[in-house]
Amino acid sequence: MTGPLVLLNAQYLPASHDWRTAEGRAHTPYAADTFVRAAQRAEAAGVHAFFQADFSGVNRAALRAGPPLTVFEPFQLAALVATATRRIAVMPTVSTLYTHPFSFARSLASLDRIARGRAWVNVVSSFRPGTAIGMRREVPRERRHAQFEEFLGVTRALWASWPPAAGEPDPATDRFVREDLIRDVEHHGAFYTQSGPLDMAPYSADFPYTLQATASAEGLRLAARTADAVFAGTPTLGAAKALRAILRREAVRAGRPADSVALLPGAFVHAAATREESERLLRARLRQTRALTGPAALAELRSRFPALRLDGVGAADKLPADLLPEDPEAVFAAHGSRLLPLWDLARTPGLTAGEFAARALLLGEHAQFPGTPEEIGDELRRWYEEGAVDGFQFILGNDFDALCDRVVPRLLSTG
Ligand SMILES: Cc1cc2nc3c(=O)[nH]c(=O)nc-3n(C[C@H](O)[C@H](O)[C@H](O)COP(=O)(O)O)c2cc1C
Image (cartoon, rainbow, N blue to C red; front, top):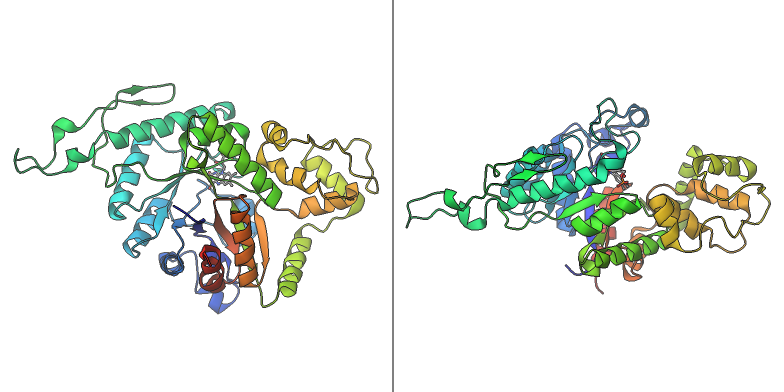
């Protein structure tokens, strides 16, 4: 595919409306129709995939902050959306920790058949704080990537257990299914034993487009070996550029072309009639939650990121040159993608430690794009053209109509 790849996260539509108003409540996350309408609008705008994150459990802290981010089991919603659309891909999330490869393979193969080849998938290891609360983890944290890789390997072997010809009815031999062509999997690994084949013929010969959500160096190397795309948080342009360069190098190291794995970070859209108005609203919203300056900001930053070299530094002091390693690859290798935005921010000339801390605390996990819809579209396009990203996932924001009618067409336009 040429041009940026654009994903719509299912939570965008309900979250973009104020549920305290009757108009906002019309977009309730409890009605599947809310997401069907969103996917149809997004499809008309040129969005490539309708995505649903999934957290395998109740996150009470998140629920206290507003409506639930997800309600429906993702494969069921994806199937429903697929039957109501024609071009957009449907992309549920599967947790390698809480699903068996066989159950996953048949859900995905069924979805691919229902969607006539439009099934994509987001694969997560679910080891993030706040995820899958109340469930038991059978896999220790340090083995999650090994389990993930084996999970994906078994699933792909199941997919391939029916070569396309096996599912083609053959009047010459009077066989609806060429059972003789179906291959047993015979996998006996550290985490899974899978002997038999899948129980149905997948619609597509190729395994679906696979996204992996990750924030660590080991996770990124795994994606470079096994995935088609990475979903990560890159709240600054410099962090995105650094992460994409590392991902491309890792793909080559894994024996694949540099552009075989796309970086698709999250984006939050804050559209308004003027840029000033949009920035004012965004600042007010961010300050409401994180109103810290000077020494207080510095103390908070220290406690959140103990790896930063801030010993003996006061808020009015110059930011130390050795706050983080100079090379972003070294920062990423030691700390994952979480510290790349701080590495990027630290390159701003003339910041005191207090100013740096205040700005750092205002950065969220994902990039925030304020402006008019056209300015936002142009800025997103700039990120793409400067080689920082291969596309975006729209997770949260306001004004869903402006996103579909004005932001996405601008981002995708080649003119
Ligand atoms: C941007 C991003 C999105 C994620 N989304 C999900 C999700 O929807 N469901 C989930 O269970 N875990 C999610 N995770 C957590 C990852 O699956 C993973 O468990 C965590 O990042 C730790 O593994 P890592 O070392 O590969 O980063 C997400 C992680 C990132 C960085």
